[in-house]
Length: 156
Image (cartoon, rainbow, N blue to C red; front, side, top):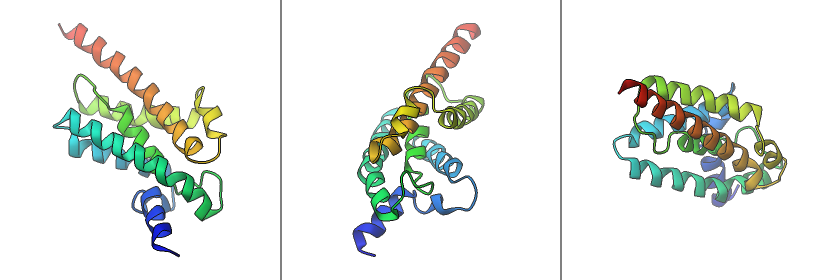
């Protein structure tokens, strides 16, 4: 295996988390949550790290299909990490219950494939792999934004 292929395997599986035997997507989402914790002190650092993971995901996930000779291989989990990071972008506050709810909502929405995620997943390549998880991340973020803001209004 060439260096490029090994690098794609490393990044697309999010440092081999995707090869864990059970629920690799959940481990990818937990990796996104861990990255969020590393950047929680700075919204802009979180934003740029999210953009970097999304860009890397688009660069490597389609190539991973070629390397593994499989459409949307289950061990490609950079998409879950990216979606989880999107779920937590620019929330007005960070609280353990909100983060836990975000994780659960993201996993449920990623599994349900609400429109247009289901259509995107049918697309081959990076758009198919990344699209459904980014959609779930956007939906999760919208729900969390509403919950957080409603909670802030009730607290006043």
